[in-house]
Length: 264
Image 1 (cartoon, helix red, strand yellow):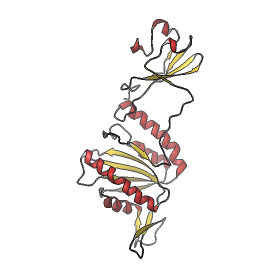
Image 2 (tube, rainbow, N blue to C red; image 1 turned 180 degrees about the horizontal axis):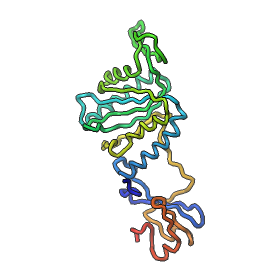
Image 3 (spheres, rainbow, N blue to C red; image 1 turned 30 degrees about the horizontal axis):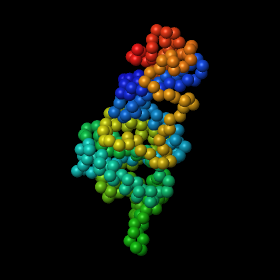
Image 4 (cartoon, one colour; image 1 turned 135 degrees about the vertical axis):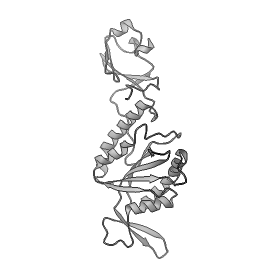
């Protein structure tokens, strides 16, 4: 069960919304290793993706990339994917002009190895492999195929390219017709247990520029504090605690010096 608020971070904030009403909130550490903040992070990303993904495409692919079989420890598997996934994406963008993606990591349920999941749009189900007169190879996207000769399924392209880029040969690529279902796949792995990642500077969620990241929005001007006192706002003001849902009446400060109670 999630805590009512993040207990790792000591600061709070308040916003005066009227002459008689103040909103109060406890700030978050924002870490995926914090049970409360991991849940909040997941909710924020889910809301962002539910808004953004359907606007961008109605056809997405769910891609899973694994680490090389000789790089299966927690640190080695993650390093292997991080070092090589960029190379794969560069090759992909040479074929497709408008690739959008969301990338998350997951800890394997029965080992310490990590693997990457990507929700991607802008792909095609098949590619035609062509060799030019100069022996350079290029792939042409197509929507259907009449022959298997010279034509690759997109899953085959991912399997072979991931291997060429130094990652594992166990790769999956499935078509997803429903954008909402795509969001479900992405946020499924945004839990504290699945995101058991401790590498400094690691992005637990990474997106293409078109999708971007959630931006905090508020119609109020917030002031950061350690606690609030009666001196912070005018007499007769009630404080609404956004975490507990409680309304702290004005006469609270006649008896106590500060809110939250632990600061008295």
